[in-house]
Image: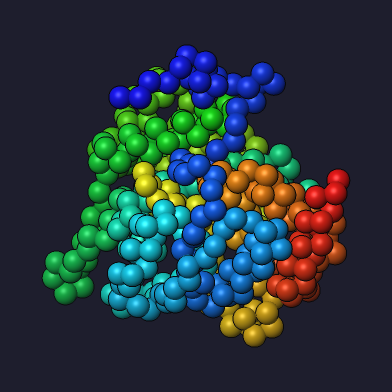
Length: 369
């Protein structure tokens, strides 16, 4: 068994001299050497925004190469070769996949999360300078359990007109998502973790989730821990979002909370996210890609690429390319703050390509600052 020296352990576990810990979005495999990433352009605007990422990665000369697969939301399942590619490459970047409503067609997004055990969803919702919103000082990280709860997919028709849908909560999954949330908070110098629940009604299921969070919280005495009922949480989010820091939630609540927080902080078009498991990570737009099937955006080529570009910066940090991640993130935020190139959802009229060109121009500015 390899032993680490005490000095190395101190560098890993202790804050830096300036009081800030090294930022990490996900467990980071590899040694920083050039990496192949599985790319799924997806449906609707997906090819537009993933194409934007490819252009900017090439402009930066980032050490990332893409292995591209065509996958669409109306497929019955992910093709085996796509799953094999993600297992081999460990990392995937994907555009949105259209999920049919009703009709018994399962969500490919759910299929991917379960197949690869991508148990943690992370969405970072924060204000961007130059992008006016109703609330200021919003900086919320929503960490959502990704594999069970109401999304377990266990539904059946008991008798005609009566459907039973099972919500599954396990101690194992609750503990590991709580552990991920507190570890994220610790590594990123965050001060508080809030558990979101409905244990006043679902006393056993959500009660087990809370019990697990409380147990994990005792191992992190330096991080404040509190709990909030999900309906009150939604009210507090829209009235005083600055009170939240890191939020940990069961599956369904996390979907609602992340999208609400994204709307408060500037909209789904600027919120990055990712899904992580022990071995694999899939990066995509953080909040619900409700515009995936917007044919008008596709025809006009005016989809907003910002969310996926920021997700790509998360991916670069995950792959241990922090300088490339910082450069991309700084360029994107500079374009947002200047406000000259914005898509319609951000109050402008720019095309996807115009935003891409603006970001590429700012890459040079970042390099020569």
